Image (cartoon, rainbow, N blue to C red):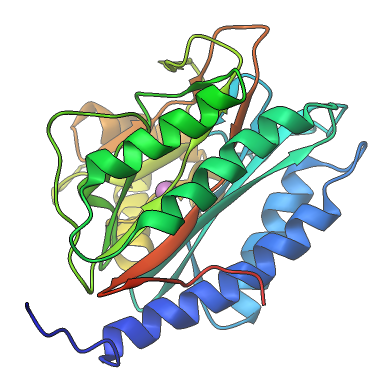
Length: 298
Ligand code: CO
């Protein structure tokens, strides 16, 4: 048995990030109503995170109906919420130590679908402890969601959280898998079941508003260079939104950086049209006999 010191500074920062995030998530979810603007919610949540002493770990994701992840408003976005199924996925960084959480706000009367992912997360948290296999977690998630008559989204997974690294090993699958990893005390992971009335496999859409640094590099174009300086300094390897850039004509700058493979994009991920996706996510610290949920509501 490896002794891990759960009072170490990095865990304290994960906890601080989780505490800020729980408050912002719950308040943001309450603000989501028919007629409210997407951009207003995203910016409100991101500003509130900064006010409380953290930094957004990635742009607030607002995914609607068939969208599952990676949708965030552009700077000229004028969309407002309708009678839809809305997933809010939000992250906080405290010195690069992260918390990641998501909740579905149901304005579409799809309460069973929202409940399916929430129940799946609870069932997963019930079995987590040092020594549990990630495949067992996936099996419990799959079983719970299928019990509601829905499908888990199998090509989206939970993940480890590293310093300034939003997705690290191990993956936490949303179905039973053969290849699996044993969780250890001190592992910090996000578990995020997605439930859908569609086939359970998301595809990449054409919209892309979120990017992250891929490698160091230099670029001649002046605005692209300015954008790269801001990215390296402020966001490091964490995902950022086009609307966070201070340069003029940011889309052009990003296109240049992408052509050189200095950054990569995160296209919106979606189910087939006409279907719906719900999501619930918490960040946990695995302990010998269970887990500590850093993003639990206070
Ligand atoms: Co996550």
